Image (cartoon, rainbow, N blue to C red; front, top):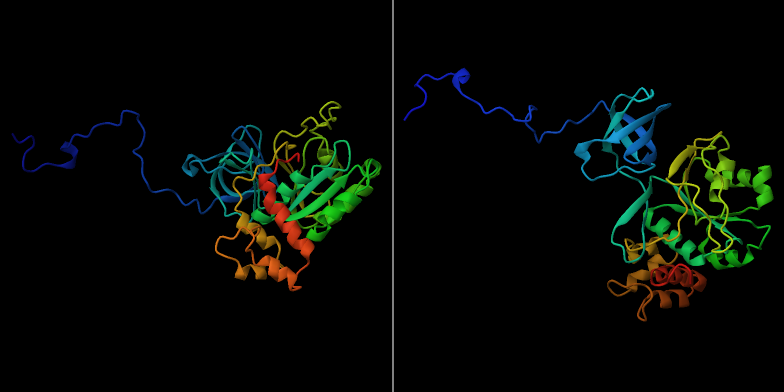
Length: 336
């Protein structure tokens, strides 16, 4: 039976109303070509603090980004209320391509990787020479993560008034890593901050280190106006410190265009996400020697071509030892 006549009009057609009262969804997403550019300074329970020009703006991630998360250091595009006024909220609609990524996993068996910082130029690995004792395996793991993520490493040794840095310098000297040695007195009078400052100019530097090594104290010396965190104390029983930083935070370095990213103290640095074959890129003097390696060579195998390359005098044997020590760090516990 015909429901309508021959000459129907669109107004005569019945349409089922949307029960939710909203517009039907579309797969066409806005391009947000007029979005403002910003940098993520910190992330706290779904709220992101961003720097837009000279204003600090609170924002949240747009639903259209799905599971893609923004982290400290990310360059983002924002729309909405960009005034930076109290209780205002903008929306992050795009995360720009990253130039570098510092990642880690909870342990070597954890398949879930966590992005700590994006777009950093340098990774400052802070370690105390005593109280607590240095943990070379943790330093090695941080170095592997830096090489893999495209960051230049910087070794910062604190508390030199308690122990000599010679042993650590001997261990890492063949890696040609820049370093700074500081003491507690130098942190108080500003000499240490000045020397570290020289290594940071023009760069975004992420600071990492396990609790109690003086990382946050050093960051506070570099950025004295930031006093939101209190310095913790080392536990006399465990030799480990109390966390004084709970989330990564980017801070502008005074008198420079550089940035310092303070990260929470770490107790472990998993490398489950690291492809060992990429670590060789941090050793340009050894990389040409891998051309004769068998396919999928791990560079620590009996038929690795690097042994002959080094024996022929193309590179320092100590450099090959350093490479293999870093590659083997995934099979060792950090406290070994």
